[in-house]
Image (cartoon, rainbow, N blue to C red):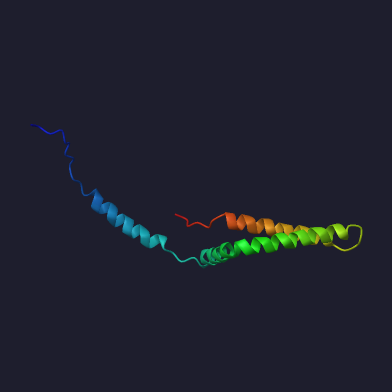
Length: 103
């Protein structure tokens, strides 16, 4: 009875590939202080996000009501509302986008 198993030749490329992968890891483990800082801030922001999002939303609501109340007065409540609302949008985008490693 003959078997239909194909036997392939063994090559030394597997050993070379393992050696290249190990040397490639040494180059990719560079320490970047800025990335570590951004990732740390991102982790703390994500952990506090359930509470922080409510605080920011209530602050934006307060600034909106304050802006409508002071509509025809020289108080710059509209710009204050826009700044607070802009910070809320930037924080939402920051939480949604996950920092990644460059590979």
